Length: 283
Image (cartoon, rainbow, N blue to C red):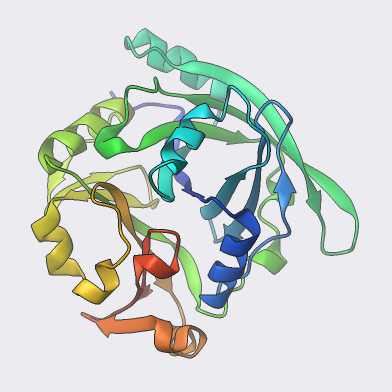
């Protein structure tokens, strides 16, 4: 029976060592990046967001070491990139109860917030309730959690949703795994969505019109992207992010020599985007 309180992929977190430098790099790729945010002290992290219609990207960095961000610090010892992803939950407390009833030891909910600089010069606050699946439940090496947005108007700010590259939404997160079928089945079990065979691997829908997660092996990764685009990607885990663009010509102009055209898409090497291939496709 599908989970009632998980509504699909909410945002993808790109964990970085130098938060401000990463914001500059993603602006260079034609994205509108929010002002920098600082999370509640127990989290010890800060962020920049890249907002789309229903979902978004988050550039996440450590500002102070805390017990909560130790897994992130451990991840950064070896690489940057997508360390975890969030699903939208309509009710964090109910989501925890739902998972625990199925024998999954969900942790939470935890409440936190961050100040938000508003376009009119004012200051607001973004507030969230979150919970996470157990740390050892990481399909393809990706940690997962769920986020309940309590103040959507301070997160989905219209001025932040227009991008020079035309990006509109996340189509797919792609994960390199030694055993793609097993990793896909693992995620499918955790979010109660069936895995489906794909031309290059195994795909798991996350709900509704939200993004899919595609698991493939090295051969599948190579079939999708030229070697120059795979440059800088990790040997395992999340390696590519596919976005829909409503202005591919604008994307060509915004990306300039950073982009490679192939198979109807424009892709940027992982080395230019904190270890993640960024691929734009016509909407």
